[in-house]
Amino acid sequence: MLKSKIVVDLPSAETHRHKGPIEWVRSLFGAKLDLRSGKEELTVSALSLAEGLEGAFKKAGIGDAISLLVDKKVVYADNNNVPDDLPLVWQAAHEAGVLDKAFEELHLVLAHKEQGLHTIIDVEIENGVVLGTEEMTIVLSSRLEELRIKQGETAQQYAERVKGFATDGPGIEPFKYVLDALTEQLADALRETLVGAKVRSEAAAVELIRPDARQIAKFRNLGFGGEVSPPAYRAVPTQRRYGAYADPFYYYYYDPYYDYMNWVLLDSMMTSSWHPGYISVYDPAGQFLATGDTVTPHLGDSWAGGGLGFTEGGDLVVPDSIPDAPTTSDPWSGGGFGDSSSDAWGGSSDASSSASDSGSSCSSSGSSCSSSGSSCSSSSSCSSGSSCSSGSSCGSSCGGSSCGSSCSS
Image 1 (cartoon, rainbow, N blue to C red):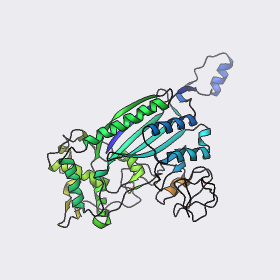
Image 2: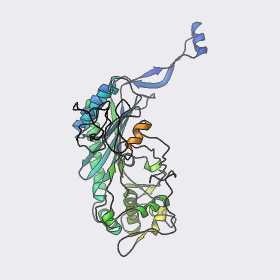
Image 3: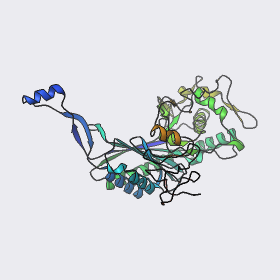
Image 4: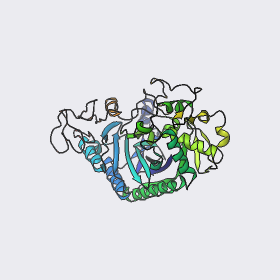
């Protein structure tokens, strides 16, 4: 819903390519060759980057880690929602030895809650980039906790509450400034802790997705009243998403009601005087449609969401003109645009498959987890030094040869 960005240009140097066979011969005859590659690589070590990031997040008051991937291998994954576990990330990284050598790509994800805003912070660092390109990108993606469904709410009660929040008060705009403040706080902290880096930030934007028939068909599967499904983190997603759904929140936090909430807010624009110009509306493919104050012509009769309604008991009615959701083999099956089960996103194939929805995770460097839960195999050891039996709980991670922060019986 809300999104901002921080981009960091880290200390780096241009690399040189190797001579080709013809160039090698030419060099023997004294030819002057231009071996510049047009690319640059980091001149700062992985350990220094880790120390800088840890210091910056500490200064910004952010300490809840979700996962760390290095070269697409899972080093740390918090499947048990352990709070303030950022130190455990670096402990796992040290034990796995990933900070002692160069890397191609480092991916750190954290969560933060502040002033009613739930934010996923997605940090990606590339070692080799095109000359002049920043090596670090941090995307901050936020959602309003007040707009999350509550246990016991019917579809109509939830819709009325969301609509009232948007139309009867200051709405979403104040939270934009909350995210702006968090973004600047983190950017300032990075300037202090990453020596030689150039940091720039982009202001927060408010975005809504106009769900199409494929997403709206899935509303039939939503539970309301006593059947509300709570959202949950998924520390290591296994599928890549595209278009408007290529967002940290869709990757790392599963909320089955988010598309429905988007529909409610868009319906509010259509049926009330609430037309916020600060909101941008996109279709599922990521195509910009309009701002909130100009969206009405784009949501006319062709918009499938216009046909939804409620029964007298508050149940949601999806018209028969909208076909049922596709089967699981369809790329739309995950609920988001281009969510293809054949497109691996995070981690090696073994690590990512065990961490998707089973509740377990591990790195590829020696420790293992069963696919039925979050238990470690007998070959892994706990960070406290004791062995994990096949029935023991595996804390929050399997990094290197250690299993998270604790092992309970």
